[in-house]
Image (cartoon, rainbow, N blue to C red; front, side, top):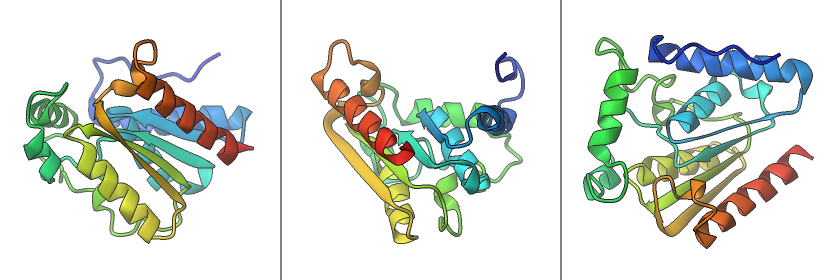
Length: 188
């Protein structure tokens, strides 16, 4: 038995509903859970935590995509060159968000939520050379300012996607180990 997700050919705008449905499926079996994701998956995790904050013990966001306007300085600084650039992210947002939708709606871009109070504790990972760096850091700062226990870790010298390179990167191994230790402490 497994959570049923939509086929990739279905409308991407429904992805966060799928994330919520999957989380509900997991919570029926294990009531004390975290929600986590990287990049676009971190967007889904952040939106799920925003919509149903009581459903999650904590949220782990790895180089999160949180601003569909792509307007912060790191998008200009890393428009191209180090892994996926700003134009790649803009393309992803265009595919995800129909043109009639407001890109600053919190269920699309959680960074723009009027309030981030009463959300689950968060661990936010950013990479120094990533166009998503500033939005992840801004979100972590807003969470902390709203009273949400928040850990922000910027990994200097890292690019978007580096945490998936554990086999070849000691920095990736350290990041994953630190995230796992935080999750363990948050869930036990």
